Image (cartoon, rainbow, N blue to C red; front, side):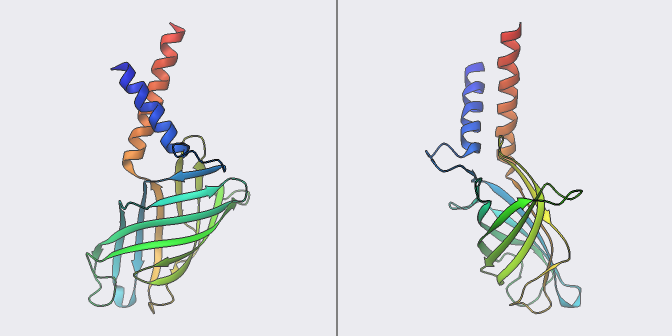
Length: 189
């Protein structure tokens, strides 16, 4: 059992650091991200969008330049919109690029400026603030500043946007931590 836990921990650490695919360039790639988006529109209409696993989802960060790429798919989980693309159950993908840089003193540790394109709403821009631990693959970014307008959907704004690791990834991180503690405890005893 201890060997299985240790093997799972090593696999989790390798997976989360993005080295499982033999990458040479220093980059952090998270294959399983979870995204929650809150949208508001005219006449108090609202929608909640959530990511769903797709084969080609990722967040990548070039550690040398801060260049960032994002791709994820999702579904409109809840909606009061009665017409247009934001109807409950609608599927979508989001692709885009941007840059992550250190945040200002007193603000979030990192700022991400992203130019994205959604199959539901076309192009839009987001500024997210948050943190990333490049050793563990932890990522937590939320919308900064005022709501982000969606130019192709008049009156529609993104009022909340959060990117975190998929809950399954957090389980792998927990296994890695537990295995490390167990391994160190045996050496110390």
